[in-house]
Image 1 (cartoon, helix red, strand yellow):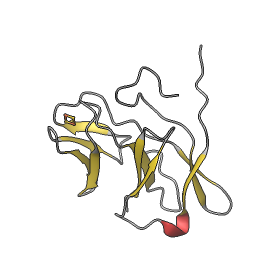
Image 2: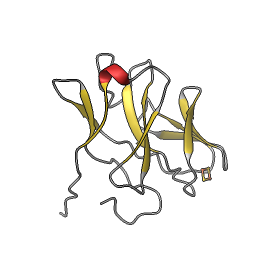
Image 3: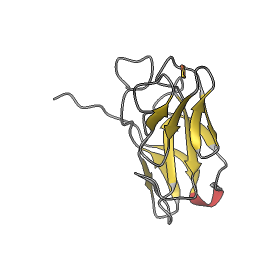
Image 4: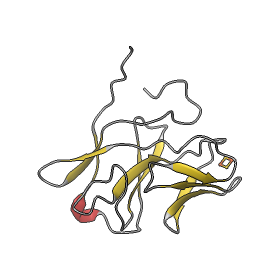
Length: 129
Ligand code: FES
């Protein structure tokens, strides 16, 4: 089977990440906006001491509008799709039928957080990298 090779990209340090204050970055390349957020509750794939830091593509899987982190979930204002960041980006309201692609994270011994892959297909692409 073909395998995708993802870069490891530093996003932030654990010391910089505050609950409910999203950090934007691009991954796996400059044209793919993404959001890292500390939820304040454990999440599937969450890193950090409380397993609550996760990252996702910021492009809605419906038609590619930007999603915002608001009220504990990702919201797309174009047609009001909502995605649960604690449940691997599961869509639970609106027109999007695919989950929001999660970006798996790794933390090194210095507390640096790296994006290391994409789970799912980023909107508008036939492949992620
Ligand atoms: Fe996000 Fe339609 S583009 S709900």
